[in-house]
Length: 127
Image (tube, rainbow, N blue to C red):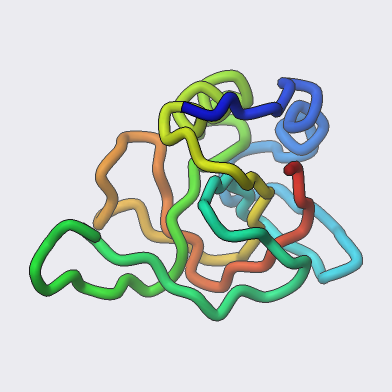
């Protein structure tokens, strides 16, 4: 399994700027966002909007496409930076990024701290 090279400091500044998950404001060159999440995947990331959408169960015969992309939510009352790193590391995937958006869903997720960002934009590539 590949070790994820993210430190808490990579995420802590983002964590500190949000008053509460979903209600803070984070301004970037790509826009102003209220939702932040950590995502890992096999493919490289590019800065900017993501057209790819996650599926509810990739091992299912007929996976259902979700209305956004799965991440571990970052910010007060969501996932701590350390926990997001720990959970994302379990996947052993090569690439990590901070995904931002303004709307999310946490109903159709597999993990407690997972959120589906509905209007995903890559704002920071970590590796």
